[in-house]
Amino acid sequence: MLPDIRCIIIDDEPKAIDVLFERLKLLFPNIQVIGRYTDWKKGLEALRTTPVDLLFLDVSMPEKTGVDFLKLFPAMPFQVIFVTAHTEFAMDAIKFSATGYVLKPIDDYELSFAINKAIEKMKDSKSSAPVVLNSKRKIGVPNIKGIDYLNIEDILYFESVNKYTKVVTKEYSIMSSYNLGEFKKIIDDAIFFQVHRSYIVNLNHVVRYETSGSITMEDNMQIPVSKSVRNDFIGLFNKISRTAGSKPGNINQ
Image (cartoon, rainbow, N blue to C red; front, side, top):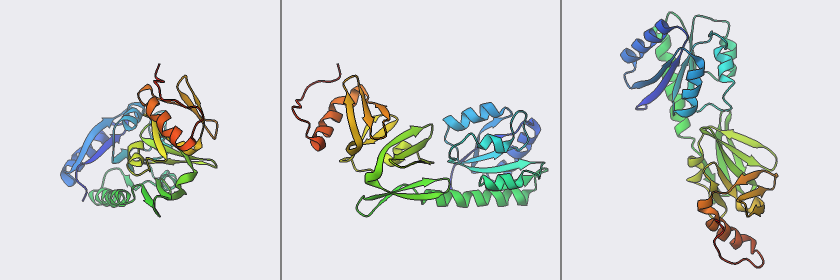
């Protein structure tokens, strides 16, 4: 069993939250309930700002169903268990890869089965972290549908989007459930450079540098370059581009 599983409960009924909270304390004391929300908007904010392993979500809530709530996430770096009194949303839950669908009143066996299934998926997810194959010529990009293996030279840049990472190539982009820091650990520093806290770029696909502090990529994307790294960026870029007439100097002005 994984230690220190962090979860959030979102349900518009406070009593239902209390019941689930007590069952979790009894059945799975290693699960930390770090947030309980009756307002889906506050729950959404928490999920976007706090690392979470598991979400317990009601289906029927004011203004938005649980299924509609999940549509707000381009990728889900957490497991989802629906806890609801409604059966008609089960098929929609399956489409969104929900780990479990527990009906109210909560049955201990059904709850335990769903949670154990979620734990197994977490273990599988931990073992499928980003990986580079064939002497760093391919990179594995974990996402909600599986793992896509990309030729590393085809990647234009990595962009941080909330807690996720958008991996952009010339042809398409993939939203990965892993954050930018995970990719930074495995990419080749001779090819990639982090120009901004939200961007890591492939130096071979930079087409223009503006002295105002931005670069243009081959897909015409404009990316800012932080002042603190501009000199380092120019130095690395000159090594691969052999810019004519380039001279060392401070470009942070």
